[in-house]
Image (cartoon, rainbow, N blue to C red):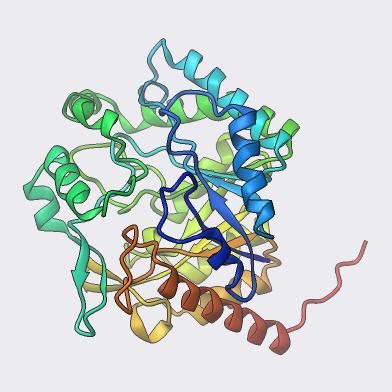
Length: 363
């Protein structure tokens, strides 16, 4: 297992990469190039430039997040082939730069949704929060404006400004797209990109829907174990895998997080895990929380143990953290609480490893 943290280059992060190097046990960062418009190729030179900055800080850059998929691909429009070819080229370039895991999502229009990016908890820390009635009472354009006002001037992956004007029309388009048609569009994409990922030594790892339930009539596909199994069956390859986000999947209290971890890790279709906790007020209302089990609804020990016992050897990062100790940063991505989360998870991993040593696998 490798512990990493997310980091945004080109001055789009309040956290200097040198500070991440100082977090005990963290070996690398997951990055994205927010300057490149959705659908365009990530040039090899641009990827290498960032990789060299990461390496100079003494860290690895083996994971990329948020090579976002152009909406024409998800819609299944005739223009999708050009954008798919761009995606194939990007995967090839990432492989050339030494990337081994690519986290992406196939969520239509909205990559994620929250009602507030700085909800104050009783201890005066602030977190991302979700109130279902508030989200449904508004519209995505209003949500985008609200989140931009709370972003601190940092980019919000999935809410790029150029995407906002088309949101209303995109949502209207999807009202006439059946769920099975959306699955076909996903398979078309995977059939085109997975072979390139295999050749490039990259494991694709789809991120679950966030939140994992229907919003604004949009197709929702990666929100439970049944649909994850369906996704994996679309292309039977180790390069077609999953990012298990315990905050996204765990927003649905019907999802058994240790069971999902156990099955996906045992199948070796789980290259990447986002570990974070959430605290529910109702089944559809929640606050993100500190990582400790006692601070939310997840048994983090049970999740880590399920991963370890099932042979997980991929990447883990502490996902969104609280804003604590007066820090001002990109929502969810301050240094202090994520550093606490990383070391809490590493402590759980060490405890599990010493309690239950893995058996050698016979050759």
